[in-house]
Length: 171
Ligand SMILES: *[C@@H]1O[C@H](CO)[C@@H](O)[C@H](O)[C@H]1NC(C)=O
Ligand SMILES: *[C@@H]1O[C@H](CO)[C@@H](O)[C@H](O)[C@H]1NC(C)=O
Image (cartoon, rainbow, N blue to C red; front, side, top):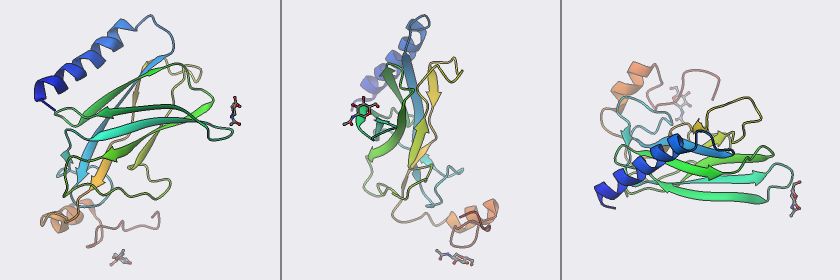
């Protein structure tokens, strides 16, 4: 997509936030997509934010998992997306997850359940006391097929094992 088109999209999302200040039941889900260059599943100083990546917001009924809302978005030049959502989704489980990467060298998605960097749970209701219409999703990362050669240095900095795994019992 042309860079100018991407910038226009981002601007529209911002304008919508301002325009809806007095509206009801409208949310804006914001987040970033990055290339996980060391396959550590969190953002580090050598992560690269990904323009042109596709994410999907999906809401399901908490009771029976029926899909109630689906909306895709593409990241802008800074790897950022904004999804405008209609309606209050209090009784639903909503999350954003990765769909498509623009880079062949960085398009792997870890699919383990409860991996916060692969899918980000979002609360889309005002009934939980959160006033703001803007809801931040956790950064979502595609794994780079071949880790960068600088990764062992990064692991040392972060206090990880030489293979990039955490030095704790938490994983
Ligand atoms: C799923 O649950 C919702 C809310 O309880 C209900 O309105 C809907 O009819 C259910 N759908 C199915 C397929 O059971
Ligand atoms: C990574 O290294 C640690 C410590 O050297 C080891 O205990 C662990 O099994 C390794 N994990 C993998 C996936 O190779």
